[in-house]
Amino acid sequence: MTTMSVDGATNPRHVSIIRAQGSHAREVAVWATHISAAALLLVAGIMKLAGTAETMELYEAAGTGQWFRYLAGSIEVMTAVSLLIPLPAFVAGIGLALTVVEAGLTNLAL
Image (tube, rainbow, N blue to C red; front, side, top):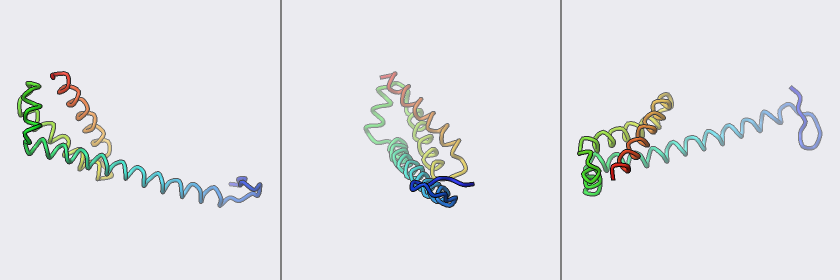
């Protein structure tokens, strides 16, 4: 494969070096996003499972009962763990979708 570089010379290694650097940056960005989302979900899930006063009041006000708080907290913790393991990324996506649906239902109930 022959490509043109910026200075007009043909250099097949030029593009492969750029692709290698770009893929590394993309991988770092993906992992940074996964770790950030996992940290947020883990904190929110632990707060729900621990039964802080704020979360207990929220679910009582929504009228869903405490069982829904445990369900939401469990989904958030499992999703956080799944985000940090490369293979179950699809499962983590489903967990994130369930978390968004749960948050929407809770807000609708208020």
